Image 1 (cartoon, helix red, strand yellow):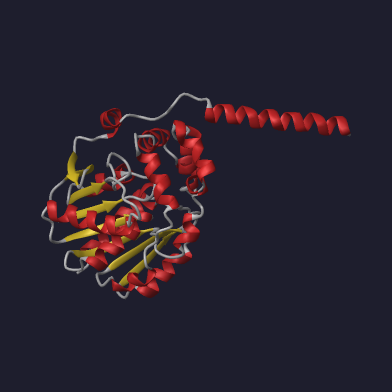
Image 2 (cartoon, helix red, strand yellow):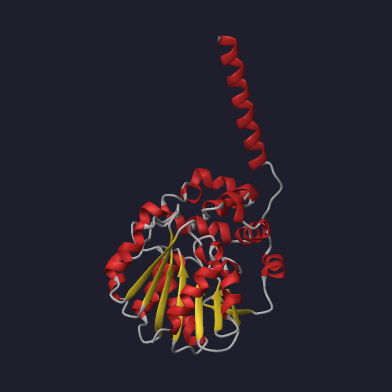
Length: 312
């Protein structure tokens, strides 16, 4: 018995050492900004200067403008399918939030107020693009920025769509980002985000893992490994700055609340909390759907949003 235990212990130690070697001795996966731009930018891409940073957005289609805002660790590409479905009838604008995708975050100051930064960024984008009236769609962290924008700029945001939105128990939700939260774990990312972590992260967002697109995982891995992005995500995850939940009740525009019933990141019960705090709303729950309904249930999500936009 002791011999068997000793053999199992050696096997465990060997496995740990092998994993450590794979993670810490692997070639660097960090991608230069120029390489990331060449691989991830689209024909509809545009770049602007905000403060001392270059930020990226796409602008395509004609009609009433729709702004789409991605979540933590995501990019404008999370809305590829939904944008394609809307751009024949609407002007579709997708942003890479500063610090994500192809957008830099400005130089970080001591005691950086990230929530105010993103409020300022949203106002800058709408002012720069001369948009006085629009619809806003936000997923996850992007949903949090979307409802903050609707509350801050009610004269502009005519309708709001929240897709598995951040808003409540944000500390508990952020605690699920353990890979970013702890400095010791953060050492894993000195050579970039390993592909297996990108794949695991994507699978965690779906109810049906078989629907994960391998090409999208590769692109998201490039986006995460873009020079500067991981360092920013680590800093943001460790900042412990969360929006004031009481501000959700400031949203006055009609709001569609969409949720995946099997969301492992932000529980479906949060949809009911948004229903309670936003006066003018509708709630739609998709079964067999996780954290990204605009990807996992594209047609159903598009059709529901279109009906909502067409309502007087």
